Image (tube, rainbow over all chains, first blue to last red; front, side, top):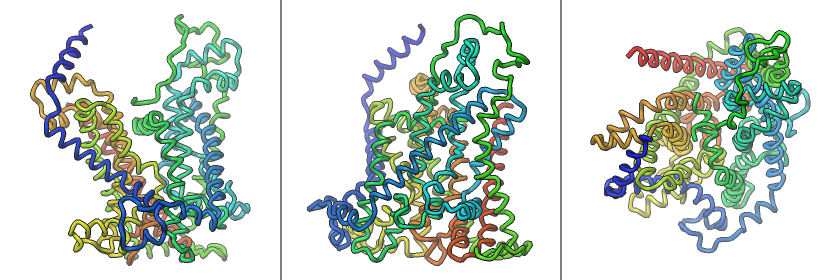
Length: 290
Length: 327
């Protein structure tokens, strides 16, 4: 093993060289940047815990003097916050579950079968990344209105089922699954679908994890389409509800309430992000590598 | 950590068995049969219903006058000629350039420096834990719904007692305080700062993942040879992660041209159209002015611009790759 020598020399050299002042300066600058990045979120929390009147007055706190949950109790009493959360959870989870199935199937066909037009088909899928939602907005809305789905969670779910990024990630992963695995299943007499469901899918745990996390977050954060098809206050998703609340003059302390709901919207995202950071980073990174 | 790794091959040690090729067996064992159509069917059906049909329909609408009640009336190129004379339309694309600066140029350059510093200096001299902690904080705004991010920042930027103005006054810079989003001179810049804040973590994560490919001994060796930080950055880091830089620049440019949520939540295109962008302009025409045909023309124009920009990107990338190969 020729590699041992340089490694040893590198560890000894590391011991010799302690971080120099310039390096400390760099780290300090990067830490300051980190504080700047997190500050708005911190400020959101502080504002949510400060009584609405106070956070609008001239006084300024880096720490709330008397943190209170008043904003939460007020907004939960006045607005159907539980409904909004329920809508968001329903839309994000059903939409993710269905679209992951679609992505896995399409990715499997594109990765593991050889057929005429495969390249063209894959390119056609990828090209849809370019298409802005505005260009499909009105026709989609007309269809949704015609079949009477306005205000229904299905109106939000159905158009998000085609997920190019999901198909891309699934194909990349499935390319790496050895053909021999499927061949062996075949020789054991498994049919096409048995091979897919009993042999291929069980080996795709990490892939499904990444698809679920990314898919759920995109749907939880989705804005424009839900804004268009959801109209009744009871039927909104949380981000849409938040944006209507900021424009609501009837509310005594709109920003205290808005910040309270904002913290609730962000909390599940933070938990998922911190708990699954590795899968998350892998997922993002794998979309960036072609 | 670069890509998700599939399970280790459980392939039998024996050479690939081709003893019993299926009827009409192709090169690959799975080449036979038409069962792949079943796997493609849902995706194909969805792409047709969700993307293709509405897209064509929208292009048709751009040639009509349609106010949402009476059926669309064909008016030929009227919307399109109006578009080219529309001051606001050109303004919206000028603002898109600002969005590209805020979502592509600044984050990519800053992301390169940050990723290299995290990987090359922080990771190696201060430990990987600190590096991944810092990376996580930079990425944090990316996981927020863009509307929530915008609302929170709007709360900080608000003119009366907003956190930013209060802080400025507290440190004696009160003269700089202003109505950030309400003043046409600063509104676009404020939105751009918000977008940089939202966007910066994405290139950092992708570039850092790409740097995992680089052999650390390369850095050690360069350092022993006396190469400074910047030299190592230019000679090792940049060439290694060029493909990722390209992908980030392309996907972020597309996203920048489409940006909607932050503009909607922060300014609604105002004040006085200072922050209007194409996607918001078309939305306005659709749902506020009921000028559906005209909005459809704007949306179609936006799509055409995105497609052209993407083609130019890919073409430039191919060319530089070919040049590289010739060297």
